[in-house]
Amino acid sequence: MPEISAGDTAWVLMSAALVMLMTPGLAFFYGGLVRRKNVLSTIMHSFFILGLVSVTWVLWGYTLAFGPDTGLGLIGGFEWLGLEGVTGEPSSVYATTIPHLAFMAFQMMFAIITPALISGAFAERKRFKAFVLFAVAWSTLVYAPIAHWVWSPDGWLFGLGVLDFAGGTVVHLASGVAALVAALFIGRRSGLIAPATEPHDVPMTVLGAGLLWFGWFGFNAGSALGANGLAATAFATTNTAAAMAAITWVTISWLHRGTPSVLGAAIGAVAGLVAITPAAGYVTPAAAILIGLGVGVVCYGAALLRLRSRVDDALDVFSVHGVGGAFGAIATGVFATVAVNAAGVDGLIAGNPSQVFVQVVAVVAVGLYSAVSTGLILLVINLVVPIRVPGPAEEAGLDLAQHGEVAYQP
Amino acid sequence: MVIAALVSFVILLVAWILAPSEAAAQAAQQPIAVEPDPEQMPVAA
Image (cartoon, rainbow over all chains, first blue to last red):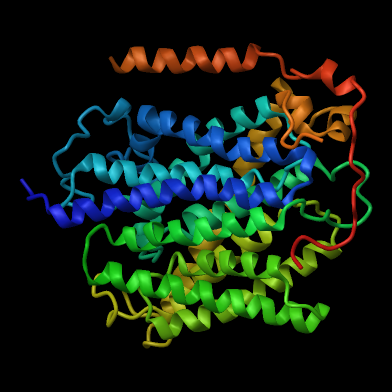
């Protein structure tokens, strides 16, 4: 029986709490970006998922994602349904120095925030009931299998040798692509002439970005699954990439639009955090600077392209999480080195160009699966509950039309 | 115990499907101040 480490356990439990805080942080981040008539509904999409996916993860999500494989490396079985057999003793497979329940709880927080990320793409016009059903279906049919592919020792992408330290493909690419599909499926917001609306509360968004940045230390450094040097590496690379991407985005917007955008600083930081997520435990802090620089440029360009398109991804989820996740996954294949993490592999710069190919395979597989299955889920749910609210409700705002509440009294 | 937990969740799921989806249909028709859509600065700026 593996022995429990008090230090590792304390760090992973603390990290789980940090990641939990990211979902309310995301609620603020998104809440500030929408118009004031939709702020409560936008916050609710994240906050409700905190409850919803917590329960589904305990009931069936964890066993599908991390349970013993069913044979093809595609999904886990039902051995751990309802967390049967998942106890305070360590797992023999995952994080063997901490209680299995601590690992489960840490992973639960990832499962929670991932569908919440998608909510920003079809914000301001989706029906709450439909979104609840979507979140249940998506976390079960999309998130759990992809997590199994990448993080289960029996998963087919794990077997291929893909490097994804904390969820660049599992969390960000999967949700970013799903967001694009959702935005295309539901259509543009009514009455929208320009490609975007003005945020109703930039300070709220910056507060949300700050909470996300804080929680991301748990997301990435916690993924070391121990209180050790690898966690310190991931902590350092995470902060470095976020910082570099934030100042890069601000610089580009300053040159492009003539002003150093506060909103750009917040979005740039999030883009940096997204990109460093798969790489955090495999690259050096110097590489994190290059990753932050690269993702700042790439995601800014993606956001500009989106603005010029007809796609109403309301809060630029695809531009930041989809593009940033794919960029980070491929950058991991470029910058990874066993000098940082002996359990990883070398990347392109360290003399192993084939790792880039493996990372590209993972990006394509996860992106395609997320796109197709998200589309199918939306089609089916739309037959049961129309996903889009009626025009008058959209005009009145979802806070009042869907929740019977308003955020701000006149 | 696990079966009971699953059943309890399914009960909630059914309740969500049956619950009113336009809870504020009447409220939405009340005269309210609808803010105009400012279509100015891009979100990603």
